[in-house]
Length: 362
Image (cartoon, rainbow, N blue to C red; front, side):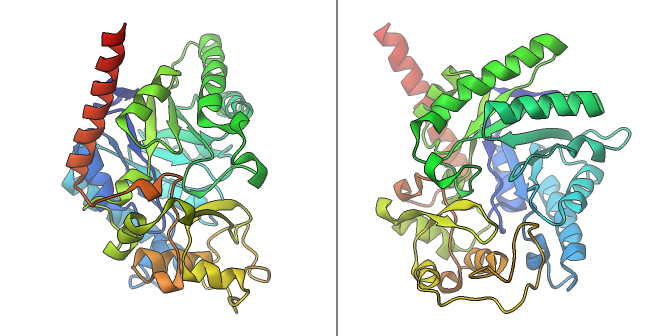
């Protein structure tokens, strides 16, 4: 299994653990993944709710929470620790500035195009920047915008396909369309990035995510030109995942028909595990009276069937009657809780067994 190089960062396993909010990937999971040679990611989404005891001011609590999580992760590992910051978050700038000031190794940013992300870098900052895109067009636009405006080249680019968990950067009708499959997108984006690399004499690794579940999946997508993969769902059912055991159990109990596409209050489709809360939403029994967080720019409380922050926070705490679990398309395949060490070892073994089998057939 090849290592993943992002500038001067080198992950011995080419696996980026996807950032999962609210609270699903904090210092516990991120440090465990980093310790096993992957790239561990802390999600900055919802930290103001998680650290509500520190301050009732959502933004102040979010800044404090991110500092705390990065500190805890750094105390637990010498591996690569990054932060996921969604463009759609109202405190996007706060989270980016905090991650850079606290010397996070890398920021991954999606849920919108992070066109101004390089503008937050300070003199001497060492934090790498990696946008998350869903098309070759978006990758080209970002590369050209960052270079023309900031003379900055993306340190990596993540392409997230429609089988990913949580909010998806696709229209509802594109999610099942093969023209938008990860296997179709990766070669298109790799070709676009290669052209930019040749033009500017640089190297930008492309990382592929969304529905990757086994070592064989990793091998196949890397054969299409990806330098590494992003995986979220697989890490939910680990001992070190920061979510409540009930959240993890919802993955293990889920059947394939329980995985559904929902319309999120933030105006994007999302993938989640069907439960009684989502059933009640469909029946029109939910309606927020006010917005306690102002967490997402595109969320309109006057038209929202529920508060997404509270729903995801409740799920993270195991209160699934009052919330729901986001998940990837393959969440129903989860069978057991295991350690991150065991998961990473099994992914490596699957990768190498599949690669050896192909070699023997040749």
